[in-house]
Amino acid sequence: MFVLLVLFVLTIYVSEPFKFYEVEVDLEQVFQQGKPLPRFWTSTGLCPPAPREKTSEFLLSEDSLLNLEIIGSLPNQGLKYVRIHWLLDMINFSHYDQRKAISYDFSRLDAFLGKIREFGLYPGFEFMGVPAGVYDNERKHRFAYFWSDLAMQVASHYLRRYGIQYVSNWRLETWNEPDLKNYNVLNFTIDDYITHVHSIRFGLDAAGRLLNNIHLPLRGPAGLFKSKDHHPFCWKIIELCNDSPKKCPFETITFHRKGSGLRADEILQGGLELMEHFKDTFPKISLLSFSNDEADPISGWSTPREFHSDLRYGAVLASTVLQHWSALFNGRFANLESISHDNGFLSYHPYEFDQRTLLAHFQMNLTHPRHVQYVAKPVFSALGILASLGSMATDTNFVSENISHVVSYQVNPFYLCTLLISSNDTFESIQKRQQLALHFISSNQLSGQTIGYVVEGLQGGLNSPVNVWNYYGKPPYPTASQFEEMRSVQFPSIIEGPAILPPDWKKFSLPLNIRTPWIATVRMCSLQFSKPTEVLNIRVRNINANEVIIFWHEKPIDVRCTVGYEVWFSKSNLSIEWRQINSGKHTPFLVYHYAPDGEAVGLAGLYRVRSVDLFGRVGAFSKAHYHDG
Image 1 (spheres, rainbow, N blue to C red):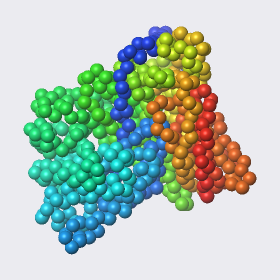
Image 2 (cartoon, rainbow, N blue to C red):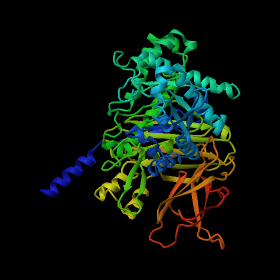
Image 3 (cartoon, rainbow, N blue to C red):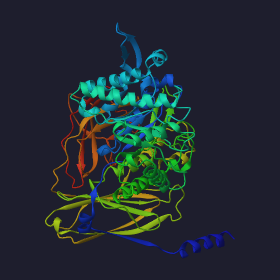
């Protein structure tokens, strides 16, 4: 009976209709059809857990800082912004001077923002929260002055501390979701809220006048924009912007539209419906830009959902980006400035992988001393793949069976990144594998150029650390070897290449047989690009007595001809004998977790890094960084 059952199952499998997909990329057409592709998706966000009195303790904790440093390790600023609630709670009231002017202690916020800057990130700085010990008195006597003075002091303090170039790239925003009672902790009335927003604008303008008359853009109201009866604050400020556009405090209108947890297109559709309502009801704000800065598949980051753990979430996020790009490309969402993914949180046991986070967070509380371990989830690696997109791109092409792709490029020197996605949204894929052929047709503009290529990707079940964790029974404290297994599948894999195309190629076909869901890129580069540049700012962080994480930065670039990075170590700074410690391990991002396999080699010594491009050319080594262990 068992044999018959097996044969029956095999018969069903074999008789399933065979499907083969083909995608043609004609470079001549690509060069004619492309439009500038802004990097509108490079933002994440988080909220410190309650109680608010411990915001500083949490954000400055080892767990939080390591999470943010890994988030900042995607190449080409794959994640650039971190939008964070309650930052003003990190400021302390210091004293009044003789004129009743308020002095603040910025030391805790300085320490945190200094780390954000060191990690290569920019804050999404919400004017949310309040310095302790001063608000109750001020709100009774000079409410507007308090908020404008605070905004002026915050802006001028950091403009002087970090410079105009850095701070002018911050995303300054008003209070998050002010209509919700759990966020409106100061019990604003509508009049209070309107005064608060205009006071923030006034304070930023005052700070700008102090430093070369610069203008600091403001975003808001970061609202849900649901029922006008239950969300009057956000609707009222938009109404005032429509009535007096020149007095509107915002350059960018921010709103929140999430999905129901079923389909990626719910996020875009919700945004478009809101835009249509704005157009009909508030036509004068149509010249402003718009941002969905909580564009998530479903609300409730901490609610465990299985699709968050594997590549389904990464594919949904990538699909969301491509759908928004198509709407921007075709003018359906012409004023879209950005979207943000609210997934920078720290997961907790027993939902290390199942919560809406970029990394799985393991709190190793039984070690002495306690330490923390992180494993990247496929959604993090998906954002790393998106970082390879070029500065020009075609519209998103929707093939069939949930396959979509976009072709991004640069003409001179030639660079191409074709991004392909197969996603069944949050559901399991019906097809376990898909076969397709990519056909690239050359252009006369490439005549005489030497072109190299590499195919990288994430595949369901293969690039899936959660599968390893599940296999071992979901241990709360994985062993060193279990962590090593999880990390061996956490980043994109090379599927084919690097290789060089024939010098006279006219058409190049690339077959793929790939497990669903999947995300893949085909990158092509011209040898006209100079060899990789020197990497910068090597940092080595202790994890425990036997492990470190090495981070580095790269110079800002428009294209990604880099395939990976070599990490080298020398135990002594006297007789220097270098060895590559990541040999055989694909290292596509700006981070490497070094855990020697039971060797008593020690971790103190010199570390250096260099990049390798798809022609095999290596960049200059970074300056050696000594780590004392």
